[in-house]
Image (cartoon, rainbow, N blue to C red; front, side):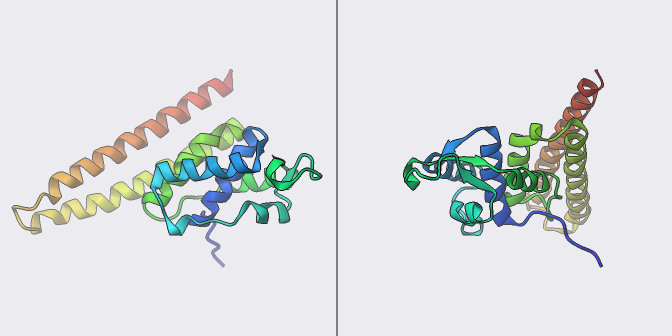
Length: 187
């Protein structure tokens, strides 16, 4: 049976929280604020991205207070070993569907925390992003092939060229980064 191993939108919040704590301990309030700020600047306000509360991450054992005796507003949060394992799982999952707003957020989060993975896994993730670009280019190329049948005064063709150029640029950037990581990991 096929199992879809791609991130769903609510997991973007989980990835953000765990990645930020991987970078270092933070107060509960600062962590919540930083997650909201990052997500809001990438995709804007989104009901789809209302993720689970940080309290749930504590209950799941993914994060913990460095001193649980402190009142909640004074607690400094840190990543647990289960949290590290979950971060690794989230970082190594596929992208879902086309390169829409949620996938742009997930790509931004993966780029933000890519160095939490070993170089080989970093290159694998970049290869998945290249494949996502290739799929998007094929989809838009198919639409471009259909575009001549659309009204002649339509701006669709020029818009498609703009979109295709943007994705080709992103694909090239991912490939260049993968090559740089691979070269530096060899010595």
